[in-house]
Image 1 (spheres, rainbow, N blue to C red):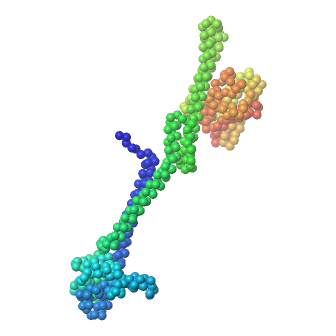
Image 2: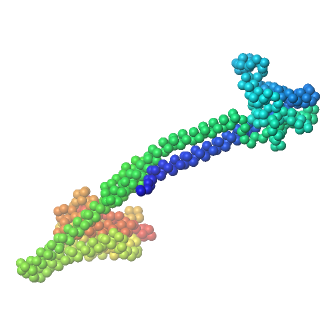
Image 3: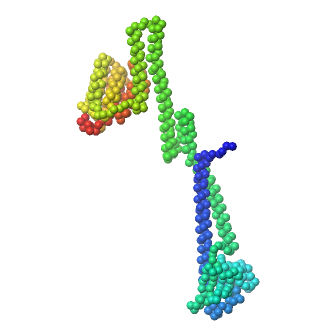
Length: 504
């Protein structure tokens, strides 16, 4: 049996919905507790007010009659007093002869001009045919008793007087002649109050249920909307992992997920570019190796078949092809080492002027033999923190590149200047030049421009790529431009040593 495992959308939906339900239930119980306590307090205050009013009225009646004889065996007196309280409360704030007073007057039955029919019926049921009432009268939520100074019950239900009930003394001429006692409000006792409480409880739970349903209806599209960018990223990641580097996702927003989507697109673009570069790199390596190997194989087969004699000239031709292969392999090794940062850099304070003069001196004879002028415009002194061997390799590659791709009768100018705390070296040669599109690709591996800049000149197409890595390892920059003499201008920027900047 397959076990259902919820996805991230379902998890987020359930998390938000569960949070809403917990909050709703917590609010429900908080409201319930607040309502019940408030309702009980309201009833308690009402009873205390009635107790005080009843004790004051009974004190007046006692003062008029001189004893409790008027109340003994005459329960109707207590109800008339209570009805007078309720009538005063019902008509409080109404003008004499107002609509409610007229309604009460016309709705009263004969023989009971002071009592509404509903109250009269309730009073009769509570009072019974005779004897004390069994239930609290209208307006009271608890039972009450009236006792004399000897604690004999004058009015009240048959239940024993509670010792912890609320008491109000009946005082006449500064003497206590009795008490009015109400039972403690521990819980609701009247049916109407209990029914009201139950109704409020049902209504509260109904509100919780409806609110939960609304929360579910609102949470589901919210969860889908919040996770839509995440799902796009997940789908894009799956396609990217399967090798589809052309995958892109729509950011859709400017928040963290939008930035993550843009970073994903940049990563996919980098992987796509690296894949293309790797394919081109392998194709270029196979092409570069195939040509000298084919020449070697042809030369050897010709000698083996007797078509060509094994002479010093044929040996020299074979050695030239082997030298080409050796240089290509060395260049590949140097490039791979510089890509990985595995080249050994032993940096120290180096005077670049001295290194350029040494490199130019080594190439001057070759430049002269090719009828190419080599002009130097150097500073007196320029110190950088670098590896002298790698910097010498950099200058040799640049001089070799200019010599190889400059026509006879031309020139190469090495010009050295400073800009702020940066040393700027410009290697500018004469024709032939390159167009703008070719200029952008000069530092790519195995790239050669058309016409004169081809493999017949002996280059592997890796020299400038190695130069780029060496300059980058020294914290500098290298870029190509059009030379004012019709060729190519290679500019190298290296950070100067601060302590020597003033000397330059």
